[in-house]
Length: 348
Image (tube, rainbow, N blue to C red; front, side, top):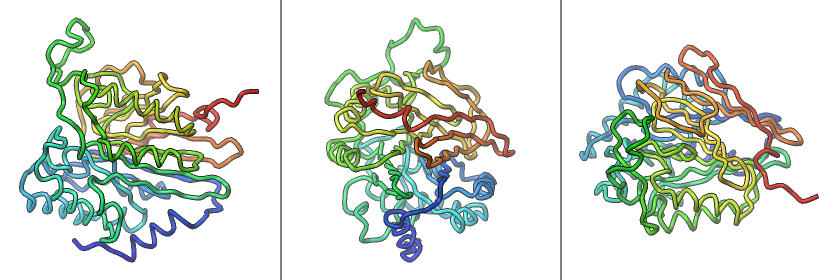
């Protein structure tokens, strides 16, 4: 599929440059879309009229080392009427997770990552001159000006640079909450990485940019406790590094948008200069049968197919509303905070 330069150029120009006079911005997002079925959730998203939609990974289930099979599965998504409806009506941004990266739970060792990258960028209409095509990985960012306020959207790549996960041995073996088989345990090596040196340098530059609210998209969950599966908790030193970086750059208004787990939840990570909310929407069409333990969970879990919606009301102290809508358009989560709740406190 060839990039649609006119569509992307208009979107990029509108997103990066043109100030909006709207007093409300709506960002829908989700992850984990099986290739089978018609994905009617996309039609529901369009009905809510968001300003943008963010794919957070597992946008297809490639799970192949054959590039032609990966392309075929993207084409199956492109051919769905519901996806065509979404693409026609809502500007799309995207990052990936393991299944569209190419292989379950894979990281930098995956030998076809550069091929997967080109297929991904072609599908999502990335221009050939884009910086995203010129650096390793697919991380990127966008800015939207709304009056005198700035919204920054940062999409991380948690696959291309990630070191191998540490297989589970005996961590938390006496904790009865973990009644299921655990795959991994936290890395103890401080030189193991999730984002990689190049992306960390870029992320620091991004957090130094002026912005009021910063949405950070990650294919895997940031603010949950260890659960034996994939999460930032498997790289606790990298998790702490983001907290330290927020503190160093004095970046206000950080909210994480995450996917991967096939259910929805809102987590509140308190070991930071201000609470870091992690809003997970994972189940555009995929479902799972249980949610893992998470002491940081304050809403959910929602096990039905769904999408997430962030609505920002641009008041003097902007209001951020988190909502989850299931496939029947039932609101299952509603939770609101103010920008002042996720900002460094100024001394009196």
